[in-house]
Image 1 (cartoon, rainbow, N blue to C red):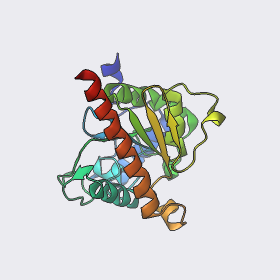
Image 2: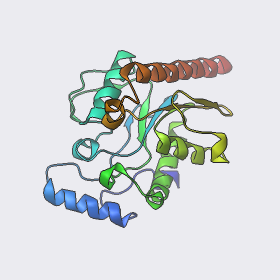
Image 3: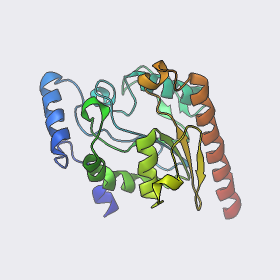
Length: 223
């Protein structure tokens, strides 16, 4: 059942509004990806970087999460600095960049108008999101923004939501897992001064450290 749910089809019709938006963009930009965007990174790893959805001229164009827009510029530069990525990031899917010890998973696979998904669209894509996280078997989850944070609370069945409020650099330790929150690395947040490069680097570094400790603990238990 998980395998059947793991990837939406190129012409997924679960969300009529997103389908219509996708088809309109195929007509406007026939050379773009304009389809559900797959996850990116190692298949099995301790760290999952959880984003919101593809950007219109970023991942929706290139077919790789956070690739081709300002959010990706900050994310991938940070991952490279912290040795979570190898290669040169050039805003294209075929730039040869690879991730080390992490995987990027978006809550929503298709680009929403104005980057604002509706609750029913998040719910429709939830089976794909949950199937990916189950297969990944990550132990540390870096939530980029409030929507990603809420989606992870749903995945772990953590309620009431008010008991786990979203805030930058917050950590929530679960049974065998940790959620680490960060403001989304969008141009909007960085231009408003809500998120600086240093702030983002600190929280990603913290998530990396926790994931490495998690791996060490697993190896120790197995030895």
